Image (cartoon, rainbow, N blue to C red; front, side, top):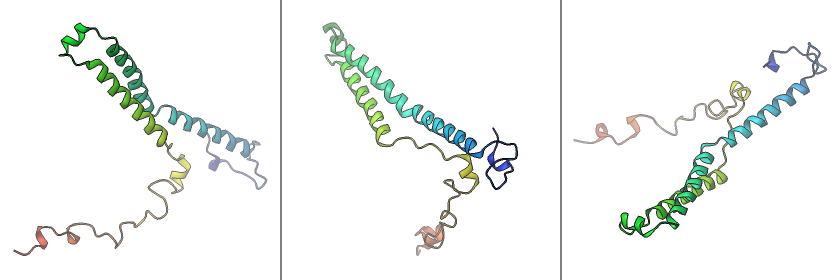
Length: 147
């Protein structure tokens, strides 16, 4: 994959090899959209929530159709029904969490190089300035107490 910064360009927007930079930018944007879709598709909350819902339905069904002999083995507690309902609740909670807080894909590598990423953004430099002292000097530790 070629980097658009390494391609020499003339002022008309055409690269020296005769290709258009607009086509290259469009291709990069399409790949970023596909990557964002893949990041949302394979979010672990979706997988865990889906599995818990599926297994919860199966175990709940087993609890609903439990015989008297099965209930006697579990001291008259329908453990399959309660476990299945718990699994359903947990799976639905994961899926609701996914819906309320969707996955944010990481920023493209160009932003990280240009200093726009999460650690290199403006304003993060010197954030531990004079407003928050570090170390034991600002705390009421044992060295600052009177004997």
